[in-house]
Length: 265
Length: 326
Image 1 (cartoon, rainbow over the protein chains, first blue to last red):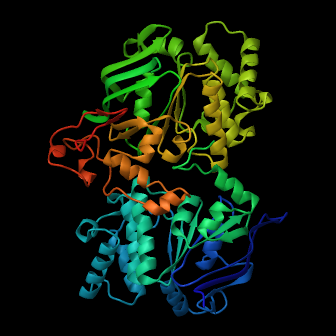
Image 2: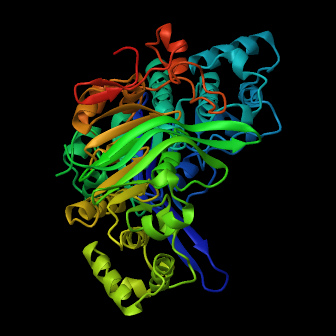
Image 3: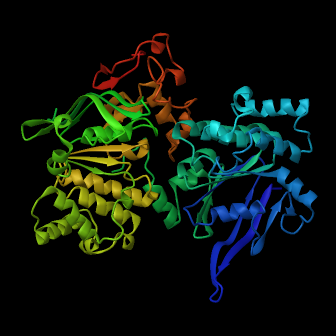
């Protein structure tokens, strides 16, 4: 059974007081993610990829359609706060902007404490301390250089690594990563990408990778979904999509991406 | 080898902030030859944009030109730009001999003026007397040449799309056929299909003989690779490698170039084969750059000498690299 199944998802935004306007941000989208699979959702800004992510994360209610995680409909079957907490342990998010995930008045340790509280562990206990150190080492951070620091004392790359350290504590089944490296310097980006690959290899975590960067999607994914104007217009393995794109939008996109090892005619 | 068009020799340009020096450009030498497109890459804070200001000699506080020489070669004459007062540069050099497509050029046009009026304003700084009709006609031709409708000059900037605005700025910057053009991150704020179009436009400038040479500044190697024949790699205010493009892509020499090149992710099978690298650590604070090679704290090939002595650019065949490994 797939970890995540999205069936006929549609989201219509409404606006205007007297003259109502409707925008169909996501239209009849269906796809699924298996255990240990990395699936990329590729599209330009406004294509509906972040709306899709927000619905899966239960931040936004869909207009119609179903989202099943481990066979449970997340908008129908989750009713109590306890069930929602349980859901947050299974499905975790990593966002684009590593700066806004932190409260600048608290040391960065707090984001790890919150993760431990979600697991019903006392963050100050010796067990928690060793869990934290283990998670930090997994993401390539030196605990004594990180703990007790404030967000402005860490670089963007370190902050993003720390967000992924949360994933090592919680060990979710599914990670929704919305443009997780687009604000990271090119020379440190590779390190963050490696961390996602490691989670997939060692923990069999499934990842929905949301990006506008086709190169990245090609590199990291098992399957690519191309989203355009709210619809999934094409899907396939990275090799299929790159060497034999079918939809006009995908063709145009791939032709326009500058390549490193080939010079355009 | 073609004639020189611009030569930077041992230039140092520092920002002075509260009695401290930020060594943004430190002992940089670079030749630009006629007919050449030179790509200059580096991360943010590597000194790319400061280098463009040095090439133009656009030195404004807190930046100050410490020493070195910037020479422009024009019709058999050598003009030492660093000895010319700013007013004269403004009048006789900028726009005519050297010009720039600035970073975020899309937003460089005055929003309350029609493009035509912005063009006339620019011309007034160069000539005491201007013939409006003549300039407008010239501008119309240039707009057509680079693929924007000539009627666009009667429009306000907000009426044009991002790509059109970018090309309008390119047209204005090259109106007086400058011999040397600097393009500072001209494609970074655009989506990929517009990016390709702007890149072609810049390429055409040289093919049509509108400009002779171009320096293309960017952080994106895959983009500059499409247009430049020579690649210059900067790190922490220094040039670490200069090489013909095909060779540096095939075999980067400097460890920093390696790290930078191998961290590029494009949809190509070669990328999957080689994997994605990253460089640990962060670039140094240029107020207190590390002694010796500025890259040594992040370098996995470092030798003892790298911590003490500063490597100079060394010539290897037709390439130059500043590293003690060679």
